Amino acid sequence: MNTPQSSPEPTDELSENRTVHEPVEERSVSQASRLSARLIYEVIRRDGDEELARPTVSLIWSGLAAGIVISFSVLAQSVLHRFLPNGADWTMLVESLGYSMGFLAVIFGRMQLFTENTITTVLPVISRRKLDCLLSMLRLWAVVLAANLAGALLVSWFLGLPGVVSEPMHEALLEVSRHAVEGTPWHNFMRAMPAGVLIASLVWILPSGQGNSFFLVMMVTWLMAAAGFAHVVAGSVEMGLLAWHGDETLGALLLSYFLPTLAGNVVGGTAIFTLLTWGQVKNEVALGEDVERQKSAEATARKR
Image 1 (cartoon, one colour):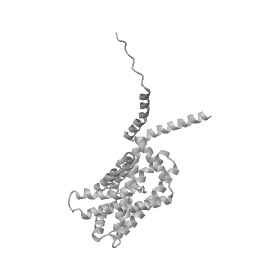
Image 2 (image 1 turned 90 degrees about the vertical axis):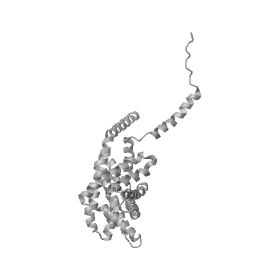
Image 3 (image 1 turned 135 degrees about the vertical axis):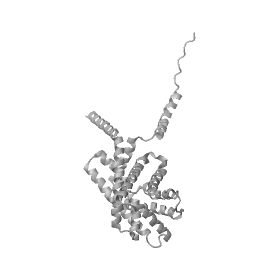
Image 4 (image 1 turned 180 degrees about the vertical axis):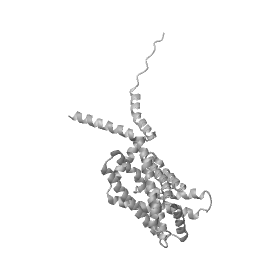
């Protein structure tokens, strides 16, 4: 009868290979895994902390630049509107691709856009629940919104100057702008809420975007334009074009378009999306904080 042979002991070479490849495999698993909601929250919260700590002067210049650069959206959309055939069913879908231009430049240029801050800087406030953090958020909101509006009105004035763009191009800018800001205050408020949700969701999914960030920004902002949703900063460029041209007074446009759109973006981005995303990570964040406090207490006890 044959006696069972024991399995050979792993050689040193096999053990060494296993040890060598384990870190490589672990990195591969980490790279292939999706970020959890808890990690996405932490990325955005830390980004929000950095934004809240920025000097006011930096916020002003960054917000002013964003207000100017977001005009690329209106300009690119108007170029497509100018040269695409009128009346075709597909024209609006292609034209809306131009709307992504300004958002791509602003987001990848790390400029201060008001609607992004409705989620980025709100998460630190929700997690800390301290008055000084709330006041810092309100300061940032006020500075960035004012700078965005100033930049948008400045660039809309420049685009209306004789010789900057051709007469047919200027008319295309006005046509796109009239379509964008039309409607009652209530209508503008309602169509601004989905835009706030979309921009906030974009901020939420970008950390997981890896190499697809360009397409994520492009598709989300294309959807905003194609669906006819209202964005307060890009809309401020269109509002300024109409005001400088004399279609309506700036005061009337502020009441009928700017303020309702601002309120809708804030409600969509903060009251709806941010609170929902906070709800899905609230318990995990609380558990993580409890673990950190326990570790800190144990470390303190060991020192004693």
